[in-house]
Figure 1: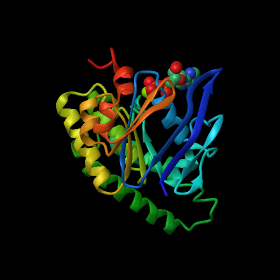
Figure 2: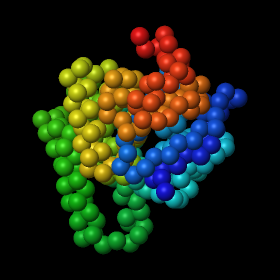
Figure 3: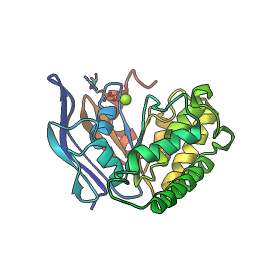
Length: 253
Ligand SMILES: Nc1ncnc2c1ncn2[C@@H]1O[C@H](COP(=O)(O)OP(=O)(O)O)[C@@H](O)[C@H]1O
Ligand SMILES: [Mg+2]
């Protein structure tokens, strides 16, 4: 059974189909990339997987259970986290605070309503802190942990955005152009982080424009064009596909 199954999903905006009949299956531990020209529907696909939009047709299963109509919050709690294309961090808070806040907002759910004892809440807080410190260490953000996010260079903020998603301890991590606008060196670092995340057993779905990177690190690639999957397969197969070459003409030199 696939860890994530998107089945025949259609999403429309006022009559315009951002996604039409999209199906995709991702196995646990895979690194799957989604590529396609601007406006192809890549971000929309992540939006329906993470519950920001609900499809008009089709369904989405995660670990065998349907999540199609769950809220983003409920989907995060099931183990799907997302780093946004447009960085969604609190610029007036530090790196550490942003990561702690992410855990609180998304995971510490109904603690008081559940009637838990203070000691239990405190123990959970200690655990949250330890997990967040691990992520900071893993993403090599130690020098910035007390820095306000708004004061950080763009490339570091992109890294914090990925760290924020990782702080939710996801089973499936969705990355929407995590390397966009980065320098070559920053990209190389991000590639290394993504490979290490996957090596630790986390499934990764990556949207990325740099085809060199995609072909290099992906187990499989899906190609979207005009809201439809036009090709799927191992990187070398996809690269040879005439429909892919056609869709990319004029987009990638
Ligand atoms: N919230 C929205 N409202 C209206 N149209 C949207 C919205 N989100 C996406 N679209 C449209 O859906 C299509 C796919 O967009 P998107 O998923 O952002 O593509 P990509 O990420 O591949 O560049 C585009 O035509 C875009 O204009
Ligand atoms: Mg996009």
